[in-house]
Length: 193
Image 1 (cartoon, one colour):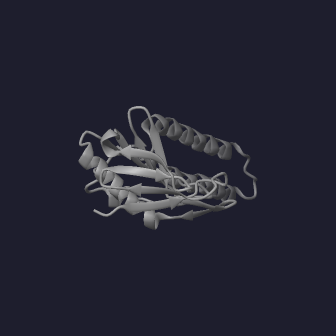
Image 2 (cartoon, one colour):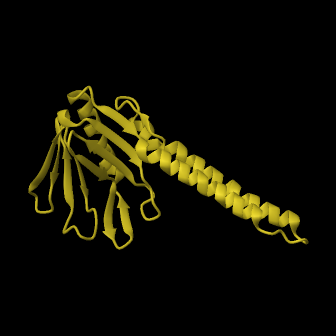
């Protein structure tokens, strides 16, 4: 199996690109100066989590989180290209992510493979988002309706709620915490965006 490489600049504060290099038994991080900064042996990884974490500036952002006994490393496919400008480097990130996930599966059969948001964060976020939608519906329904435009006002108010509901349900489905099998489900993790 060949080594997979992924280069990224995380933010404006980084002097240059860092290099992530995946080997069959470990993941290494090299600084902008080429010096080895971190080695992660796959047999020490306890959990691999893959999650979409898109934002307005980074709509295709995918995270891979590797958790050990005492530490956690998160790697994203996004590269800082300039002020409010991020480049999606999925073409090199995905092969590296696959090699890492499969390497962890081979080296540590007891590792946990999770997708989506962390459960301790997902349920409060979902509750808050659902509560905000209910409050939006309540405010819209409480607004006065003009006597001359009852159908138009009701249609506009219902439209706001009907637009927000699919957005909430789409996020809830994509971000739901779940287990996955790296041998068979990695394609699905990529396609869910």
